[in-house]
Length: 258
Ligand SMILES: [Zn+2]
Image (cartoon, rainbow, N blue to C red; front, side):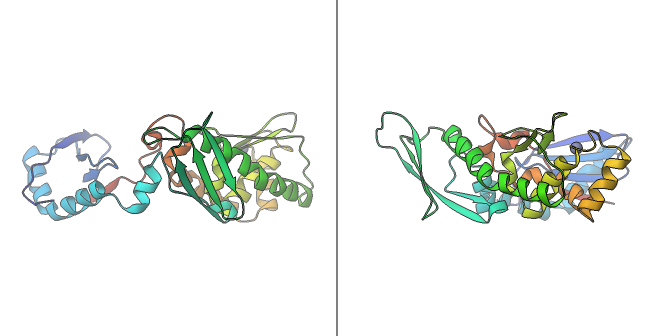
C-alpha cells in the first residue's frame, strides 16, 4: 500500500483513556482513542509519526496471512483438530448427487464433500461431522478423568454452542462443546475436569475452586488461557456467514502513544 494513500480514521474520545491509542481492527478499520480534552490537531501529528506502522499493518491485513485466511474461510481446505492431534484434508466434489453428503476416509484423514458446488456452504455437513468426531475422543477422555478422580456423571451430550465450553446439570449430565476439538489437550482436560467438579459442587463457590485445585493443580493458568481460546475456532464452525464477526476482536492491533 502506498504511503500517501488516504485512509479514514475514527477519533473516539474516552473518559477512561489515559493516553492516546491507535487501533486497527481485524477488518482493517483505523481508529484513535484519545483521553477527554485531547486536542484534535495532535491526532494528525500522532498519525503522522506512526504512518509506517499503520501502513504496514493495514497492508498485512488486506493481504491476509494464510492462517488468517484459513481461519476466516467458510470452505476450509484443511481441518486441524489440535485437541486430538489430527489434521484432515477437505476436498470438494461438486458433481451431482441425490443429496449433499460428507464422506470420511479415516485412513488418509480425508473428507470429501459431495454435491457441494462453488459458492455453497458446506458448514452444516462439517459441523455435524465435527460433533461426531469430538464425541469419539471426548467421551473416553471424560470417562478416564471421571474414573481417576472418582467423580461419576450420568450422560454426555455433545453439541456446538456459541458461548459455553461445557456445562453440568443438577442430575449429573455433562454437556461438552465440540469446539473443544480446536483447543490444546491441556485446555480440554481443564474443561472436562471443571464440569466433573460440578457433579460435586453445583456452583463456583470457594469449595468448588478448592476441589478444582486439588484435582488439577495449577489450573488457574488454564482458566485464564481458556478466556482467549475462542479465537482458535475457525469461522466455518459458527452457524451462518461470517462467524468471525461475532468472536471477540482480541486480535485487533493496538499501539500506545505517549
Ligand atoms: Zn463452572
